[in-house]
Length: 135
Image (cartoon, rainbow, N blue to C red; front, top):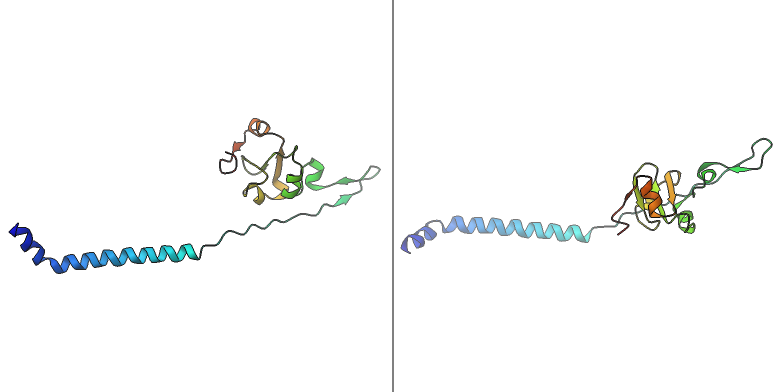
């Protein structure tokens, strides 16, 4: 017991310095973490709609160019309105399938939007379920 007491007395200053350093580091980390949480903002999602142009082919009725000629909606709002036809949406540039209300689905460019009437249709085309949208 006497050896431990002598050891603590001999290195008392070093123990206090190490403990003080650890305490200051911990408090600084906590302060920075709380400050970061306070200043955290949510991401801004901008939805851009595209205009539909009409063309008159020679000797035929008018046709709409762009995605509507393929039967695809022009934007995600239009996709939501097509409930039976667009129960699920995906992108031409991705292999994921989302619900139309999913935050990731809202970031899909209108020209890349692909509609699916059911989840089975999407899975048959080799799409993967986005687990953050579809549970």
